[in-house]
Image (cartoon, rainbow, N blue to C red; front, side, top):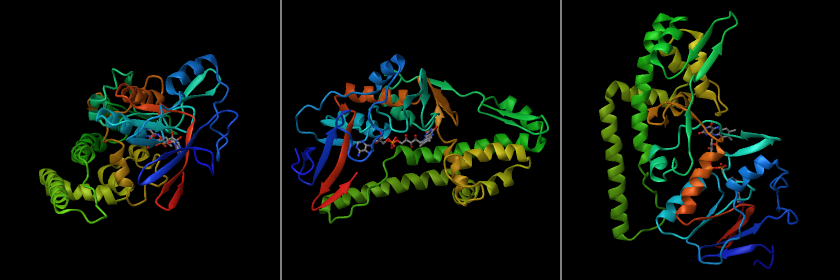
Length: 346
Ligand SMILES: Cc1cc2nc3c(=O)[nH]c(=O)nc-3n(C[C@H](O)[C@H](O)[C@H](O)COP(=O)(O)OP(=O)(O)OC[C@H]3O[C@@H](n4cnc5c(N)ncnc54)[C@H](O)[C@@H]3O)c2cc1C
């Protein structure tokens, strides 16, 4: 227990971590919004699934994870599977962070922030057996509906024939260009798979012993030769188009491919959603790719709703982590970390 702040302390050689278990009578130090709100019976059942407020066993922890968002939970699952003693400290009364299901209106449960899944890596779903732990994906079909002022509309989805006839209503040229556009994005996504599924080499900031330096050099060479191999597979034209997509505004990319405003506006949504940028912002072209490079149920570019809301993604990962031995504590806020002589407020 810290004598200054009265919070629990975990002491390690390199740092000290201060945390407290939040109680209704023991409000958090900074934010007033984390105490469990009044809930309907249905939401109480759900919250029981999404929270775990039992206290933390007194033991030495190999890894303490601050925050039970889906990334913290994923780290916990993998570390616990590797045999480490792991605990997750989540300040809210529910786990999940931005991948959360909550009762915002009495009797109605919502995906409160994120609402669609596609970017969770397939290897992670497979390795953590998330389907066995309750994850159920419901493919989104149709994927978009764009109404026009003149009464026409553009409906797009996973069916290539439907997409062709829908786009033809506005432009025959665009209808035949669309599968080629998708094909090129698919090729780029395959290149991105390599980056996403391969650990990027660490940049070490301290002097390493000779053996570690050699190991690091080998890891870097393996990584870069893998990337080079993938770029060569793309070929010169696609490789240049790929760089163009990464750095250009989405408007330039879409104008190069298509002529109809309704199609460009529909696809342009993928370049600006959640990115606080316009389609004319350099780099927004990459966001076009970002939103099609995931997959759902083995199908590239498909997004899914999650049964039970996005909190079910976090819950399935938490179940995998618990099964591997991780402890997950809610209402547990980390106040600050002391690293050496410096103190980082959280
Ligand atoms: C509005 C919105 C919509 C989105 N839509 C989508 C979408 O549809 N699809 C998609 O794939 N992605 C979407 N995203 C992005 C995605 O949800 C996030 O990138 C992802 O959830 C981040 O996960 P995380 O675990 O890294 O962090 P977070 O989800 O932010 O989790 C961090 C956790 O740490 C906890 N925490 C923070 N500080 C402390 C502390 N001091 N002590 C203890 N706990 C602490 C927080 O309470 C939180 O639970 C959306 C994001 C937002 C905000």
